[in-house]
Length: 201
Image 1 (tube, rainbow, N blue to C red):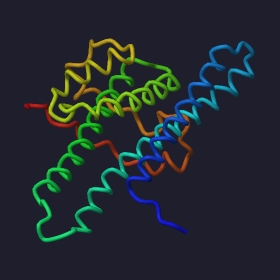
Image 2 (tube, rainbow, N blue to C red):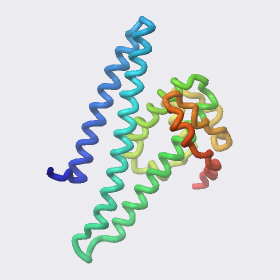
Image 3 (cartoon, rainbow, N blue to C red):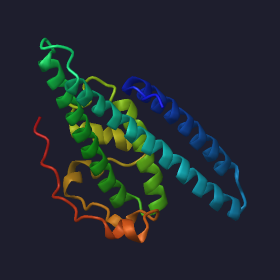
Image 4 (cartoon, helix red, strand yellow):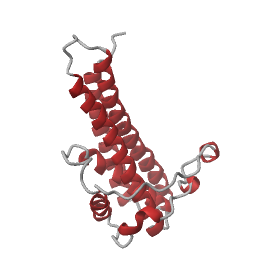
């Protein structure tokens, strides 16, 4: 079997993400047009699975990008390899992951505070993941003001900005707040970490 190169793998995942998104949109359109309760319930489950596929594919795409940087370091073409450039790439990957985690945490807290329906929270969380896939392409994504990005996320998801200033002190949703998690997943959850320090940049 021929090994898949990192670049080819990235192209395949990008194409797969587009197909997953098209499938999710297709199911979503059917869901909005459905009127029978049984059909709505069935399509809701299908949309949930399709949306989760999009999120998982995007997460794998980001992981592959980071692995590609490591691959470059482990396969240096010559002693003249630009160590500074590689170090910058690694730092950038770390910064991307950290900023994404902070934004997901912030919006997760706001959703748990403002939205009572777990299904709606899940749908909005998946929408945020799709938004972030575009945001990370922006050159100032990791250096922009965090609170400004949280406000942007609120506007994009249709949330109020009433609690943005205090999001760091809002409670995190418990592990079992996601109705899709099974008992094993819930029991495997770890205690929530302390809120991240205020952004002083």
